[in-house]
Image (cartoon, rainbow, N blue to C red; front, top):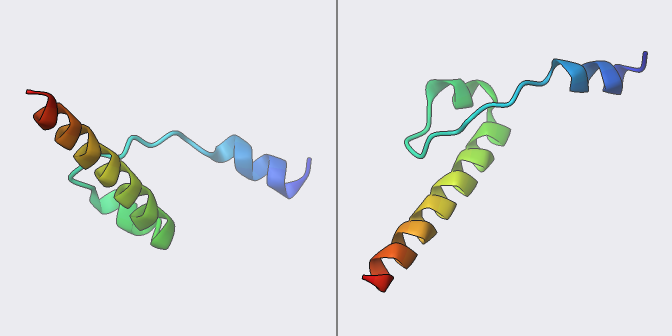
Length: 53
């Protein structure tokens, strides 16, 4: 079994809350980037729903 395949089998899905979590800090830069994506997406959704009212 290759190292890349073994690594991908050990990955788990992690839900990222808008508020963030301490667990994301453990992922370092990758966790921070993913949290920023989620936060930006949530803010855009809120802006769109507020504009439609």
